Amino acid sequence: MKKNENGFGFFLLSIILIIACENLFSQSTEQLISRNKEVPVIELSGNGYQRGLQHGNALRNEIAEVFKKWKENIQLSTNLNVDSVISMFYRATNFEPAIKKWTPELFDELKGISKSTGQSFKDVFCFQLVDEFWVYIDKLQNPENHHCSGIGIAATNSHPAYIAQNMDLENYMNGYQVLFHISSYNDEPEQYLLSCAGLIALNGINSKGIGVCVNTLMQLEASSDGLPVAYVIRGILSKQDGISALKFIKTIKHASGQNYIIGTVDSVYDFEASANKVVRFLPDANNPSLVYHTNHPLNNDDLKPWYIESLKKILSGEAKDDNSFIRFTSLKNRLTLPDSNLSINLIKETLRSKDNLINPVCRVYKNGEAVFTFSSVILTLGKSPSIQLTRASPDQSEYVLHSFKSKN
Image (cartoon, rainbow, N blue to C red; front, side, top):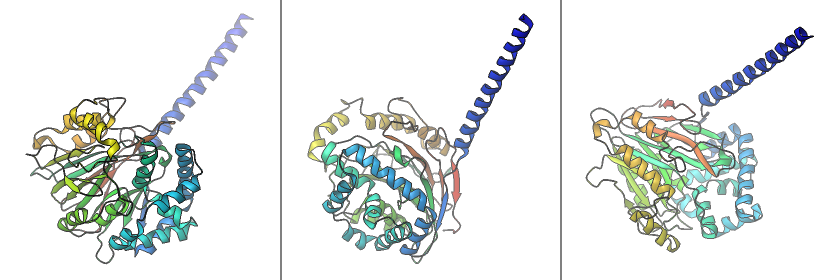
């Protein structure tokens, strides 16, 4: 009897070990798949309407899914009927004239997305307005869901210019990362755009060595008839040279408070844009070769009244537990180095950093949390521009390189 009991015990132990090994293998495989999973590339070409049709046809199912999750997120955050909220938002703003004036082909692009997906034009139009919808909700609730961190490093004799950022977005967008590769058309150069299915742009670079990264500055005044952020990004990247790109950012009326890090071949610039002014920012006035930013304005004083006192506390150092202040300090501590020490490896280390575990630069996706690092992007400028990006946070996904077909 004892012998049989020992045999049965050995049998049970063997089964347990086999199951454990299978679970470990399964977990290891899932981690490997997650780490090696790349952002899908969607090829677009032709005029705006044609690009919209291609976008919608390629991502019809994904757009339907993410629109559903978008509406569920609005319902959850506002506790109001979602279609009523979208309609009220749509009626409360007047962005169409600015879009048609400055980026008319993008209005046609939305028509193409709507046509090819069967989604209403109003839903497609409003989905583009990520920052502008945050502005609308801010008037009601003042939420703090803005966590992007951006970097710009000018070219030296040892490396080209770089701009980079962790693009942090709301959790419902997880899994819908895409990279649009747009062929040159008429006067518009070839482009790579990080985006979400159904959205025309989040940041990007063109074949002329012009790139742009963005950070929300909710404290700055907004405008209900300015040019929304997604269209500003695409407008910048439609330009053939840096002078035109910089003139564009300074000339247009901005719909949302936003920080723009713009790279133009060998140089980098940081602009804090609001409804009434565009102000250049330098972390060190004596070093135009390095810029970085998070989510509070440092030079632009065109503020919403309800943010004046809280921003004073951030700028004075009194609000040391502020998320944006903590991340800005992390960037400053890591990047304030001699130019010779600034490298692409340092950028990657910085974008993966978690110097403060509660308020890290790199935010891993977690169920139940508001935001996560949707993608980490490094744009290499100069004569051989390229984009490297991760699917979700850069500590759990490798950077994948994409280069241009056309040359400067």
